[in-house]
Image 1 (tube, rainbow, N blue to C red):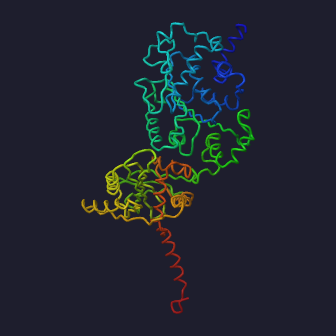
Image 2 (image 1 turned 90 degrees about the vertical axis):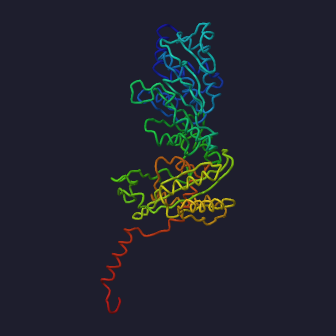
Length: 515
């Protein structure tokens, strides 16, 4: 290739991440007999989105096996370095060993990719470089003009710390996987770790001109996973979701996944779940779950001029409501599960507190608390804390097996401290699939817009979105028990209308004959 054409290819690859991956990385990294052409409508679209500098927070959801990690997490850091030698790039994964493998991919390309060396000779390192600089699966230093404590590239696993190192670019690849899907403990740990991810960045404030970039590269694992939560709760993120099948029913990368394979997966009851979650990245699609995200209604917490707690919401007649918490009819449910073990496979204790707005009959979920507790005193403390805060008119508790002692203990403790807690055991329902039936009984209430939750209730929302595919259902079950307290009563408005109709009727009745 002559010098002029070589420079044209070089500039093209510096400007286009898609062409860089297609022309520089792919021919070296993937053997010809295994290689499939990258598709403009899939990989081109994804890589244009990722390289767009207009947003410092991006989420890319692509089907499994569609080379998302290869194209972005493994290839783009090399491209980043070629464009800015002073980048400090952190590469994360749910499993630290896999993050290290991503780093080794980068290392091998820098060392051996002859195409990369040809078009970008500045990346070729002297033989002495590995001896004099960090050059391993834990850190890679590259030549740069600045002096930094951070390597150019380094890996991290979910739960790990960066030990005072901060990145200008951070790639989080599949941080929520099978382990998190199947374990509430792992999910909680992942959420907590991700909640502190800003600490890994040089400039976490996205409003700054030199803000650090954070990319989420992932595939959905199920309804209510962390990617659903981020989409719902963090407006800083721009998202691109690429499915295996487009809206017209055509495969987006037919060389990887044909129409026949798509049809087979959709027709197979077990594979259809995988198809819609991991290939379409649409966990809520095709009736996989029983509750529609569109049914969720939210209230906000506020207070009156005297500082009394209140809530605000838009009722079913589209009218804005302001109600003091003390004016709600409040009831509480306890679904206990005390175990000496806090292991991931033990059940959680749940407390759900609901206040009913008597004028509209709307149900306001005031508390949705769940945790694995090993000592009953932790539950007693929570019960008394909530009772002091809300003063529910009724408490109900499930009392299967040994759980009956908890009811007795709460009654005894309430007498000892002089606090009356009106608690009674719930009717026992030992029928087949009782829990699932109880949860599904909430469908009419949610679909009718009669239940309101607070946006902070992530565990409840996750169970709602995942049912019946989720690994926990404690809070939804406790909410289902609340229906026993929601005996249909006339609202104030309904009572007034009833009295008006009765008065109109009486006005036309003959006082002598009675008709």
